[in-house]
Image 1: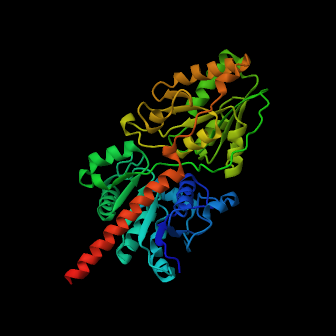
Image 2: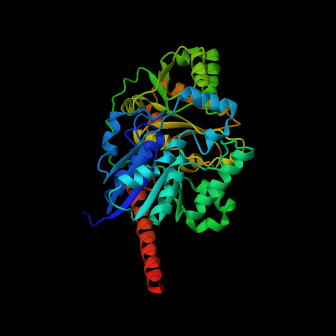
Image 3: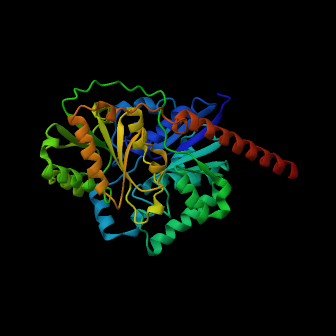
Length: 424
């Protein structure tokens, strides 16, 4: 038996399932293993709705001390009906609520009690199962939220549903020994909301894998290739990009002669319709690509598009899209649509690319015009991006910081149990 401490990682999102949080969970898992931890994983079984299996992600999932999979039965058509009719039980806390019922499976299957529980959400059902396991094993619990929960500007809870989420969040925050959030903006907002938990908040951002190989692709320079690789759903829309190119195409069509505008990712029906109805002959809807194909498209592109999460109040822009780090690793200039003082805005420099702000989307037209002119006159230096990736967002660096916290919490727990034993 290993002498390493045993961490139980609870995350519905985990490779080889493919979505942004699956990739983040896999990166942290890979580097935590390199510390002194035996990491067992509790995740959802394959298939999981909206998290397609991707064999290229198998290496990210290898090496767990023990793997426990919990089946989740979902029906996308019923989910759609429930959302439209607002049947509240669906969102207590989310459509993957069946995951929480896996408590007994975990307890009966896990061969070795954990020294610490590390849960990752979203979906929040991961955190609610972790809460039950924390109560059962009575060990420290590190709760990670990739996005804000009750204070999120994109969740519009009302009535009893709002009360449910607020009460659940407070209960979990009270029980957790450490609360990891992925942006400093989110930590600031939660510190104002829950000042009593200020000392629990820990900055644990989205990360890149510093050892991930990236093959340099030779581009022909005959065509300017601009690509977006990510999700489009609800208010996160391609409309500002489409409108900018529609204006350019109408007034200066010769600039678009050698242009390809690619959109690749999971798109909802409304946004796919917007792409197909754009009237732009150079727009290509690639659909959902595998992880490997998405990386290849990034490498083949001259410029990469980032569309930040739209919110009603710019001060509530708490989100740091993991896609931004993928783009930085691709060494391509980025064109970002974001908000002033958003996590993206605070990190992105002129060397990384170009920024336009919601509320002033006309900036996009000027940026694209400038770049199209530069391409036309072979000003290649405009497209070069050779900035070093910030260590702050390295999976290795952040996993080491998290490991220090794990050590601290386990030591405190053991000291507390020792003192209680002496008193008894």
